Image 1: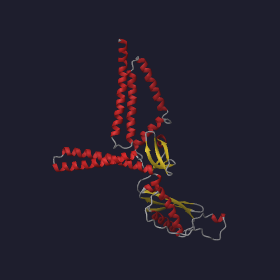
Image 2: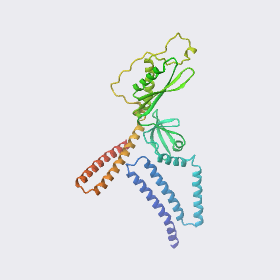
Image 3: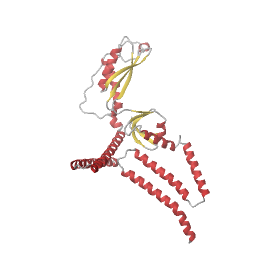
Image 4: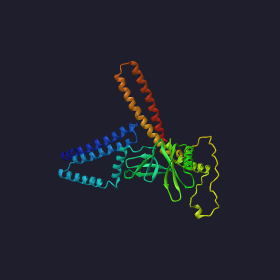
Length: 348
């Protein structure tokens, strides 16, 4: 009987460590699930805490085992070797993506819904996680990019407002420069771009390369506006009787001084507002970006409520107190509606 009792007592301490670790992990998950106003980085923080608790719990569990000190030392040494090997291989393993994920998210390089270009991959951010991010591409499909790849390659983030749209065209030396620049600026204005300007990027043997730029107010229409700018450049050059054809064309094919300019036709005005292609292509990424904005708004409201509650405690003027209380009630109502909307979207 004493022997059984001793065995039970010896395993009581390790079992207690396991129970405590499990309880902490459950509490960690419960707390973060209750804090709905956190941003998407909350998942990374929650998993980081869970990893740290699990790691420390493992060490304490080993120390609490009813074995000799020498055996405990051997187990801890073996664990240290595994961790060292993992760190040594971190550049090409899951641990490398984990470390890169912490770095990328701590730098806050981009958010859900942002238009980014990573090396040759361009799309809108749909979701960020500890090990990778998910982009929605121009063809509305998805691609998963490891965080380690992002950390080792340049990331181009497109501004949401006043981003520059540009396109290039090469024309012959026989056309006056001022005439071309004026036509290109008109094309940019017809596209809806602001403050257009033109660069001459190359003086070739047979042609001059012109590049027209303009500022786009809403980057959500980046791709469709780029396409429209190309169309307007062709229209304006044809309208101004500028031939868009290789200057070496006559050396390759005989023609009798014929101009290759299509007849210009003005576009019919659209009465009804059309849905932009970006709204259809990046539907999920747009929803993800809107959700993150709502979560950020919720966090600001929660912070504002805390500030008002502090003012209520410090203010003695009854009118001011009532005013702050009314604001708190209004903000709490808005928070409830936004949270219900987020829950509805999650269910959908």
